[in-house]
Image 1 (cartoon, chains in turn yellow, green, blue, red):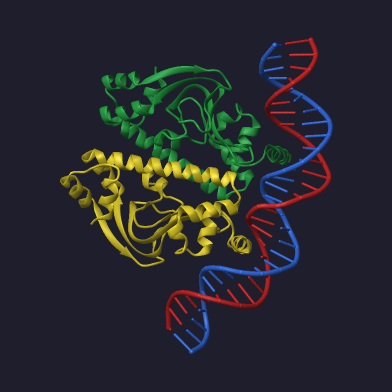
Image 2: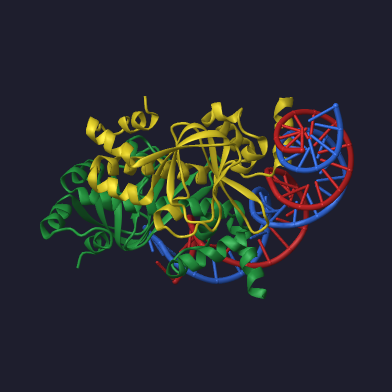
Length: 191
Length: 191
DNA sequence: ATAACTTCTTAATCTAGGTTAAGTGTTTCC
DNA sequence: GGAAACACTTAACCTAGATTAAGAAGTTAT
């Protein structure tokens, strides 16, 4: 069965016709590991729903340092929200971490969908509310906790993901250098 | 004219009846400076739209340190989104910074409003999208920039607010101690 | 298989920002 | 209007995490 429709059903209930309508607005694609779906300076024309594999988004700062903004595994959406919503050049990269199958929804189609199937506007409203909450929590965590506590939270929240990710990406997500992350991990093992 | 309706009109256009409907769901209140509208552990039953004065939300970490999550001046909404959406106890405090006039919208009324006036669901969807983008940007800034650069961004983004806020709150928002903030400011003056 | 690249580790050294503490304004409010 | 409470400053010292560098271990592609 379709993972996207399953996920939508968790928040709103669509009729069979509405479900079909949703699918006509989307497109499925396969990507190999390391494919770049979006680069800094480009306009994010699509929102990506992952059905297989892993994607990640990140930015690169003035010193050339990468900062992971989010990971997306099956059942998750990913996009450069600023660029997607404004249709202006963004600052994020979106890259395939592990060979992936992805459902694409373009900005235009999303907007049409919202008026044709108002339940989908509700669905995305709820999804974005949840992202906002998660994002605010991450901000608070970054301000309140040490790197060690953040790593601990990360391993609990993304328990399955942790084993599929290179350490440097986890380090980047929690906001430390790979070198410090390595030192910290060694320290934790001694306990 | 009503600041709330003005703000709604920037994103969706309501009929006069719809406008009246919106207002029947809200309630206006006045608060003195230092009033606590919400404490950690309480359920955030209302979302607050500021028409006069300034509010702020913050959490207090395990070491008793305060972290400002957001400021709200006229035209802005404020709430503990996690608690408001889930109707579970939250971790945020919401406090009146400067004597304020506030429009309250309860969680129940918001949900009824969404089905009665679908344009209002669109309005909030757009608002939350914008919060998410701003929040993600703040996260990236915290990971990419020094305290000095973050302060610089803050003064540009909240130019009018800066002069009304105690330094310790600005320090907290950008993620440094008041002592370091004071030192940094002195350093900036020398340039 | 092996050269080339990337990831991870370890260790020495450095620094942005934290902590502690003490002193000087400013509000606030009986 | 004066004492308490709070906001800001300065300075000495401290530390979590950064930087640099160099080697070891995995991956990738030919």
